Image (cartoon, rainbow, N blue to C red):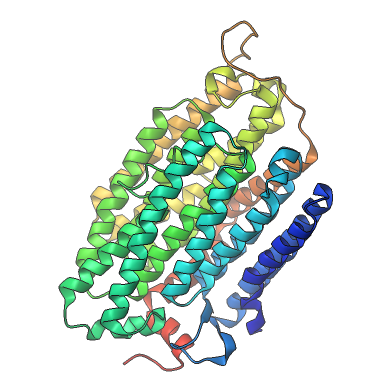
Length: 501
């Protein structure tokens, strides 16, 4: 069964190679990418099922024992992340058939999406820091290519800002790796769990922890390192925005969870206290930024930031309930946020614009889009019984249980402000009358919708409903993930073959 760990990483790269071989026939290239996405989704879900049945799975590539070789690890957290990645990449692949133009596809859209997907899964499944750095670089190159495919000035502007700040993050990451290796002599994360305990200079180790916190914080978009995100995610095609919104910041969050629950545990009061401050400020600044804009995708981009704050809050509180809430929030948010970006494409096609002032009447003329928007939007806001309600409730309860009243209050207030943003979108785009042609608002001619665009949105909305109406099984797997995170010796034993001393 260990071969299952390789498939989520290898399949997208094989698909990218096949799609490149079909570059002279765009239709054949698309279907090669679609078939690869189907196989990849199946492999990711099969891996998640195997982890759920058998526990943590480990593969030592080339049979080199840890910590000397390349290690692939799938626990419940990484299994969940890989499974959702497979679902989202397949949904975006279906959606892109109608949304991505021939011009964009000729620029390498399909191979780049597959390379990005492989890089994301590699980051989720790697067991050592250097390979995590490699996968980050793969994702950076692929995502930058996707951001500028349209070759428009606004895309180059957002893409350059995106790549510059992420290169700075990369510099911090490799610096932290060098310092940590110099102190411990290892980069295997399971081996680091024990090695950092033996480092005598805890002040230097704390500085290294701060370096990693900053590097991953940039990737995740936490305060005050998020400014690259809202200037980038609204510029590319909707399919690109959706997959970036659903996956990229979550790799940063995942990396922070992994390191600050497995490696940097020597001074939880300092490291996790700092994370809690950053989480609260991230929630507040993100939701205030969303309230200030009237462009559909810009609002959603700022809400990525505020929702990342909730995830980091659970890590910072660092109790089993809080970590279960973080995992549940990741599962909920990856689906909801990617779906909302896909819905912006439906709204733009039906209403002719991404600007809320130029939209209107979608509820009257396109009732299905209104329903498909309502489910993820108000799940994001935390309306019961949708998935976002349970995610927020778990985290707020976790904060109250350990008397972290400030963080719990911030979570409640940000939830209310999220309701305001979603209500603003609903009122402007769906409820108010459709603007007349001479109203002065910039619009393009509406285009027809088709099943290829509606189907993935409907599937993701249905998943949001299922998670909200039947949260028990999803909370159970989140609790398993949280148990492993609060008992790192399980991860160490699976990788190293012996319990830590």
